[in-house]
Length: 395
Image (tube, rainbow, N blue to C red; front, side, top):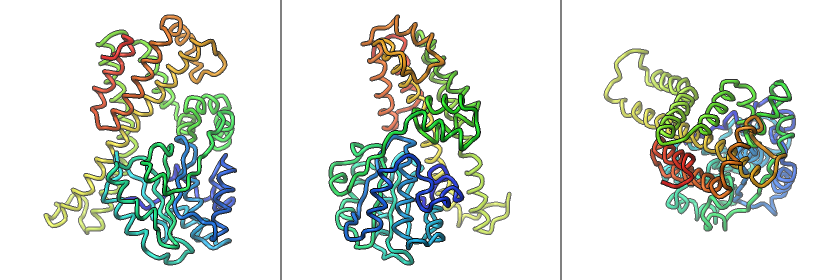
């Protein structure tokens, strides 16, 4: 279980210091006002919250800002910075790096929720990926959410309240975040990174307002190139052979990306554990501690699996944006394209296909995303989906 705040979520400590604890929250003034009011009025405080919003809308950033406002006394900047950094003892946070949140991790959260605050005003439990709970795992939380200790606050984060069971939704107060405008995201990215305004606008548009993804695209020319190559490759799929080839390329690119994101961290974690166990680099590992290394290997494999599936899901999101553009063109709209750089190819496809065929492809992509959540083999799922792209029929 992770008890640290991610850098993507919180930005930098220096950024948050501008107006602790809300300085890192962007574009969610209404939500901030609601949480500020709750944090300053214990009599009206709700002890279980659900923050929802699309990926990149700042759900986790807002959750940790709220936690800082709850835990720290007003004006206690040190305590606020500790919460935002994930190091305060009265904060317990879970951001799963596996495909799902395990029952073991959920039980650990519930157990921690019954501890009284040690230094701060409240104990806050943040679950960043509440939508990754299976039904059995959700049931572990029910009583803790319904009857939390007086000074414990739960803050769950998910894309939408529909991603959680009705029994969970009935026990929380839901706060829905707004979807920022592309122009606003572009201005933010340009200010943060110093990239050209055109690149910032393109990245915000391609990321569909996801701030973290927009920043990555804006600052990584290779990522922009891979996205363009993938979309153009799918447009060239004409049969089963093309489908198999393009699916393989997508999986390989996602695998390479996942390895690049996790390899350095994996090595550092292993080296740190060996040092903690007093084992010199290159020395044999005593049998008595092999189980600890094995547990670390298992955690890293789960993280790699999630990273791979998240990468493929991002590709599928990009494909949905492309075929959504085709539908837009088929219905006579021209001013709202996400993938303007592909307009010539998309117009040709819009003329060649019926709207029904395009909608069939979009449905197939959505189904593929759901199948990947159920641990279907990525290559097979993509091949089947691309056969539908080529033929307009579901295999």
